[in-house]
Length: 81
Image 1: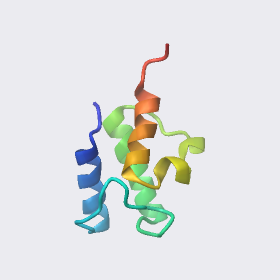
Image 2: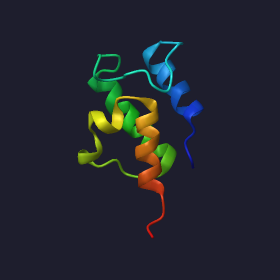
Image 3: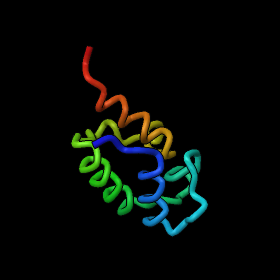
């Protein structure tokens, strides 16, 4: 299954109770999302995309905004050339 920005934002809005959360809202660097929510987010992403998130994938560069998360998901699900 391909994850859309709308699906990801809806999930994050439910988990954070922040209805105005957008694609560029910082999630981790400002404390919007805590470590427990991060674990739930990883499980959600793995289920939605059918992939495994590796430990080295879990960085601020990859997870601090919804846009960055989708960029990571796109890289991980893109077929190898």
